[in-house]
Image 1: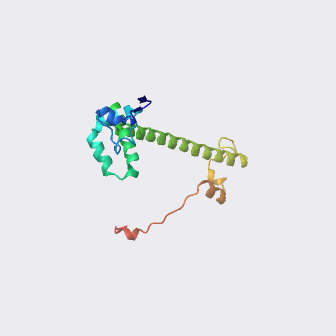
Image 2: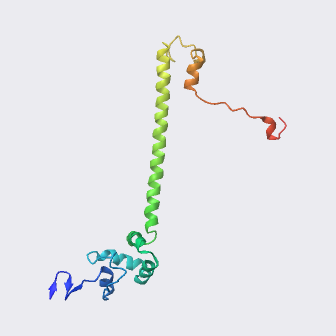
Image 3: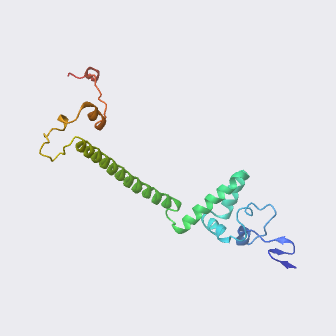
Length: 171
């Protein structure tokens, strides 16, 4: 009597046992991770790692870690099928290069934003003083028009004094 996925009361074999053409035992280590309706999943893992190696790896792991191990093996196997030389390392390298490019673009954009803020601050300073750097009343020396608090705000930096005797040279 046939019924769905069962033959005479027996469940259909998992994808691993089906590919390996063997009887799927009740305690099959592959069954929970390679269901019958996903045969490609085990096919790639088998092609890259081999069934006996996968079996050994799964049996050496505690049950709560097996699902993650299978996910990793499936990912690596699929990457290895797409790129036999580099596998998932090629994908990781490509993503790292994209990160590097994006970080460079971000740094350039941040530098441009700082540059624009400085220009805007300088522009608002000159406009509030009633002069512009190109106006005839401009004396040529920005320090002549900037009071101490404004200078500290625009050029906020700390000075470091170095003890020259500590370097052991003849100063």
